[in-house]
Image 1: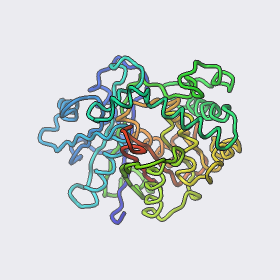
Image 2: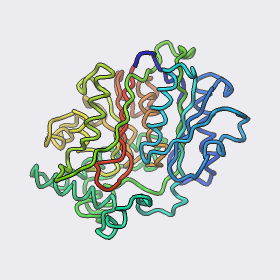
Image 3: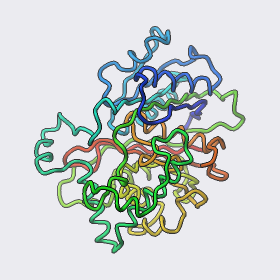
Image 4: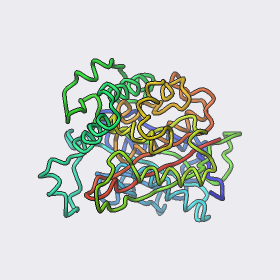
Length: 382
């Protein structure tokens, strides 16, 4: 990225069940990020509003009472990658010189949907075929988990260990939806969702929350060494025309490789990663796709303790989706909020020691015939 893009301020609400309106959640995060940046709200030249289920012109609705009359507001929807996609678009505008200070926020109120699995695409002509075959996302990831256990000869406890790790991290995060640790026995004995995935191996689906950040090409006045966006990549899934490797996560590997090239770093340089652990098996698959280990060695990396707090490359110090929660439109932005807190030494009890380089990754959209609809990878550094 040629022109430096700084993250001047960040904020988020706790994730969980809220009595507050979506407007209140969004405005709390937005005003918090502006205050953290030490600027006036009027200094923001555009806003990127990221959401999945909120409806049309949501950003204008949520920001209406803040007195931002006439300000360009862009509404971004890209499934679970919506927030990260908003950051990507904002970076483009900043580097093009269209603006010098913008704000990105993501918000979702999934408790309004009543819980259960996230609704599948309604405009995909193959959705009905997939539904009749029982191909909800938990079932798809259960197949990936079954294949992983079979191909690499490991036990289901290696999946459960991901939940144990991330719940232990989440217990240290005051913004996490779930702040209790669990044992491997509790994880493995929780209700089966789709064998071999148990309930505690699936991220909660009834959660509300918002996150926001201020991006600028101006040197932030409050920070001598501010966090920069070193790479911002969005990729779409490719059509799968034959037998595909369900453990490959090709779209994420492709996005990560482009991000490493853009930032001029390698996976070995990373201090921490916030990744899309919607299910325990997803974290193991993404270890491989992000280059943290070789194929078939993800469970060994986990067992070694390298991805726990105190390890060489801490994965999901926030608790990840499994513990922090997954309000879709907010997730990609919240991952970057956590990364900034870590890089600035503001993460409290879950602080990664001497962190200077972070990667965030989230995928979005389950549609027929592709790996995922979108994958976003960002690299942040000081």
